[in-house]
Length: 226
Ligand code: NI
Image (cartoon, rainbow, N blue to C red):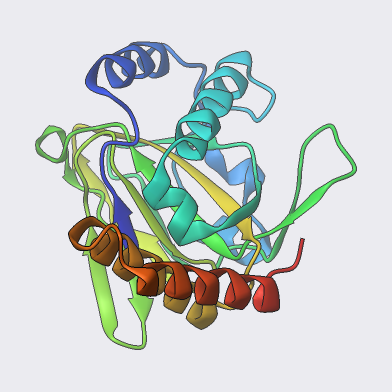
């Protein structure tokens, strides 16, 4: 399931992040790519231990934890500290599949990348190209979202970032290990959750809402690994 989460950051939060990122200590992004991906990668990143990356990353994780749509869709167990990238001057990242397992820097913990996320910091009209193109069984999807919006997609997906031929594309990207590993199960739980919310708004006193909510939690109990 591919999903957009709008307005992860409020306008003023977004503005402050942008100001900070524009003055960031950007480095060649090839250092963090795996063997195969290294050849395809031409962008810049903040170092993972860069204080700005750590600070903004923590802030993003807090915002996502308070975002009901993100929590319902991702059912997050662990979130890898967000990373930051910058594409300009033809910068691109060719087709690749992300690593399955990431180490959390400075800890013995590892995160399985069930879901990939990209949070856009540049407005679409500030740059040409730079679409995130995600392939799935329904074809290829070209994603270019307003600043402050996030796309969530299965970590199994083949994807690329098209060359940025004008302007600068700033984004954050990270991975989530979900309580529910399997994308199909997670998608059904999200559908059920959204349907229950819709019904409960129309029929707040309905006993069926209570029963369906029970089904939701019992499915989650059945499928979740903590
Ligand atoms: Ni990737």
